[in-house]
Length: 77
Image (cartoon, rainbow, N blue to C red; front, top):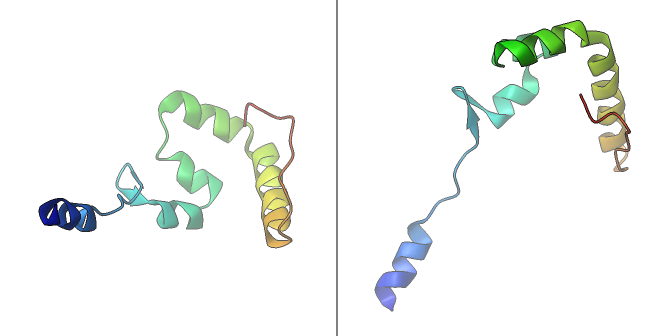
């Protein structure tokens, strides 16, 4: 039993990494900079819809700062 407890203590939470960047590094990137890490099809759609995505992100940041829920009907962002 003592051996199992030690194993549980040793299990660490995995850090989220996407294409060599951590979650915190990805959050600091601009939309165009973060698009460089996406596959080509996703990258093209992000660059084409850049303004709508940028507005959505700004609205989300304001809502998060006020501790409100983010509501949207846009499912294709």
